[in-house]
Image (tube, each protein chain N blue to C red):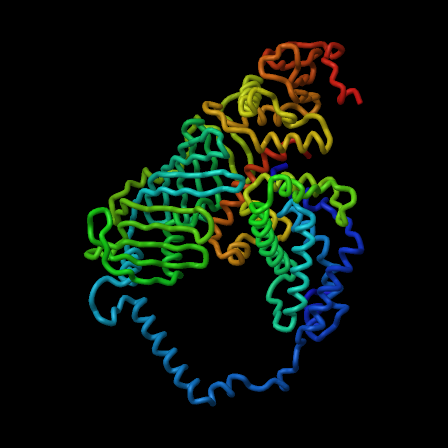
Length: 411
Length: 179
């Protein structure tokens, strides 16, 4: 069952028991508001507001003025400058629309909840419906160490946003036949849409990076854009976007239009030696045999991320609310571990164990390196002994009667 | 009774129709609000506010799609506002006051009791950034299409799908083996 199905099931089984006091409060206030609100009045009883307004002389003048404004805006959008001089926003838009390819570098930073900080930089190449992003992004929570990862993402916007995301350092790829992804601004179409929909204001000629440019400011519902355009080509040379709330800033620079881009740059063939996850089905293809070594590796990485102690749960573990809360708290304070290898291979090894392999995880509070305490065990069908991983990561064969005694398992 | 008829009767001043709408969607909206906020008190306030505003504006309300999706969308907006207001308030509180203000879904004296599944779901979703949580909850529980969510949130479909994808990806590791 994939995660979406699991979440769907949880929602379906979710239930609340509501005390009548809650109902009384909500219904009481809603009915009070309902009684004060105006209900539907038959249309025939309503005065014709439109006719009343249009009968006033001043309203007629205002309506005529509004029509003039619409015509003016239409001319402006179509690139007809009323004074026929300088670069107007419509020139920039039209030239952007006409460009077949565009490349630019980007930098962004974003504040996350719970004192997290996320940043990224890289290059984006756009050719028709294809977009390739070569990026390095990093994340840091609180005072913890930053964790960086390099990725290559290629999207085909013409085919329901088919995408491939490669993590070369981990030889890991995510792909989906029809999934979206990434920020609107970084899809060129999204950027142009924001530009079309925003309200612009020309700030005149300014100097930026040692050259003259025409500066425009655009505002959408939740973002502010500043665009510097080349006065000769009427194309953007730098774009900055800031969110109207919180820290969320993106800067696009080194923008070049109509550059030659080879089709190979947008090749979405998945490398054969990569582990590949289909994000639509969550099917995980691994190009080699999964072994207990992968389980050991993931357990080690997880324990290192928790400061040298194995987690309360790993697939399974001590049941109950208290253990669950403890596990969630651990998840919150876990830090990414450098050189942790391809993630999820240990979990995938577990998922592929036969159903009757009696997998059990008992690693709660066990220290990395503790040779006496078990972390987990399983028994393959037909085998007379269990494979037991200990805190020192040794794996021993143990008779069923000699399995370590764990109090909560005995209950 | 179908939603369109209930809404029409409401608009004609029928109090019973408003109660029927409340009874029909109360639990679903509370579950959604708890899943989004991981806070029962806030969820109750959000559902309260959504129904009060719905009742207040019933005269001008026109049902153009699903009533459930409309209420879910209003609720998600209200939860977001209340959470933002709570965060600002928490910043002004001392650490002790802030701790005391945190809600515990297991507290037995609570007026709204959540079952095990909802507690698990809410705790797991709380691990995600709000934007991802919102998209997952509205898509899966609110049964809203990505396109509708995108329109209601004023963002692109790609962004919605991206948030959903990254959220599901994280939920995969959080929920692994828990159910």
